[in-house]
Length: 138
Ligand SMILES: [Zn+2]
Image (cartoon, rainbow, N blue to C red; front, side, top):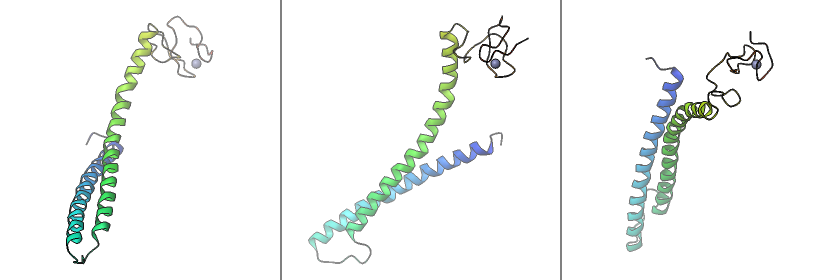
């Protein structure tokens, strides 16, 4: 295993959420269908359902389906957020470097020059003092 434990745990959590979401959706759909059929059956006959009633089953089915959708959403949203964070940050840095011709915007995306040893901002190649905090660079 080369991945960090934290990453593996998050991945497992998302997988669990997806599986849980599918299971809840299927269970909810099953309850909705059987509840609906029992409800229609009850309307035509006077038989009393031994278990929980059709209305309750319909309600529980709806509940499960909503929870399933929520779990699915959370499972896939985590992956999307991680993807966005990994993909957009280099783009932001590249854009800052491009727009400012290698100078960077507020130190972000600056491609030339020394880093300030005090505040970490990257400065111009010929800078003597830090742009951000004024510390002598050489
Ligand atoms: Zn500085």
